[in-house]
Length: 296
Image 1 (cartoon, rainbow, N blue to C red):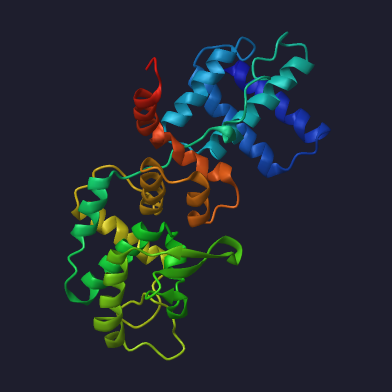
Image 2: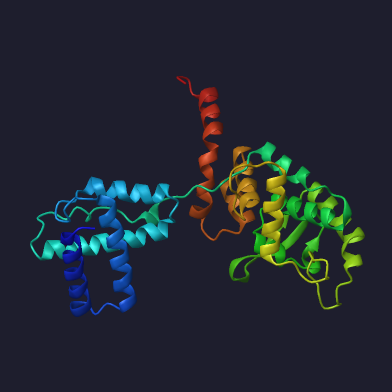
């Protein structure tokens, strides 16, 4: 980083410290983010930066898999720096003024296709105590779209398998009723009859899924179960703890399910959260358009 960048960053930070009384931590973060920006621009003068160069930098950060929140924080530093340059008369036009926050970017979830889900489920052998338990977990996650944390917190009293549903407690303790498919019911019943009693949990432990010591499984352990079988299923791309939840929603919508129904099943407070899954519906919409539009 050349001396011009150093000098102007120092001036800007002194201004923010004296005039805006920003904290030491905030100033340190600004210095770190602005120094990284300066290195990325190489020999470009800080007073000659263009809007296109800022956008290219943000896209590079995104391509490097920084989260929208992290990129947004770096953009804030760039914006306040250029506002300082403008106030000092060092630039005539602020190139960062109309750039939207990357927090608005929509990050599409990682979704497994139907064959990948089948491969994942079949990778759990369904033999032995651990195999039966793990298969029941995977079948349940895909059948219901539950969060990993919700599955970890599931109690025996939440199950109503004969009626084909369960009670689920989501974020903020919000309760919802979720249907359970027959495959998941079969595996849960097998786990309840053949595995859970042998773990000899204490009477006060009512959680459905237990470890070999008879204690409740943590969400981290369930996540590790998912990762383990994804590896066995030869799923190459990285998947998130919500991989089966995302796939559940995506496959329902692509098969024609109503968005409001999927919202309710997932326990989303807002329909806008559920709408992120509609990206996968493009193929179905295209087929419908081709079938029904007279000029398709």
